[in-house]
Length: 294
Image (spheres, rainbow, N blue to C red):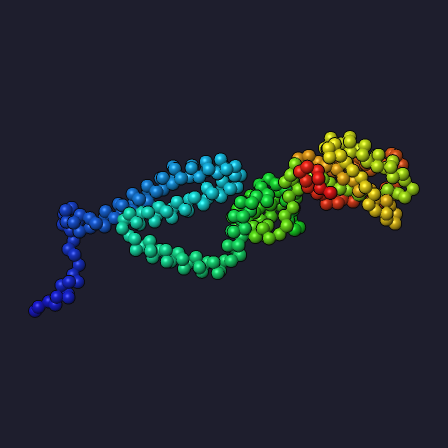
């Protein structure tokens, strides 16, 4: 009986009986595997020993803060691995695999882009926050109803520690698309308070008392000097708006300074028999570098 030629062609290769036959039959595949491993390891080693230190040194020279360097360090790992795999496949002669992976990655990226628009928006916002630096780690910021100290800035979210010792995770898109107040961004912070005195009290005397207590407070600057203006004539009080400046504002400093100043003025007015029928009223602080804010 004659065996068809097609059947003969489909017979499996015989099992190698010696090392020579093994190398002859699978030598090319072994060579590709070795090239793949060598290429992968070489790129990983170069990335760890050369690329990562160079990137960190460039960031240090550029004066970037710890959050940017931490983010760059986190991103370098996946990037180096992707490059290592691409080089390994190319060296091993699997160029078609790279092309297939590229097409697959493009399709996945397109699908993820439609499904995660908010996530990508937060990612882009995080990049701009790290670039523009509207605030830094350690700054006290106010955004909406949230007030606290920035603990961490990531690509997707930023973490804020409130003064009640709570952690709030805020999407970077929220921080990028809303007004963020940074009271400690500049060298000086101006505060405004309205002290209410009675209509029968001497306005000039009350001003002297307030200015004297401001001069006694070491936390209040002499230059720019404290100023007082009559801003209100209400039904039961005359409003004296007091503006004073604090140097290098940090929450633990200027809140304490403000509290001590207000208490000192109240006690002094009581001692000077100056009536205060209306409680002191806090007005939002204003920020400036050189004292030129009106």
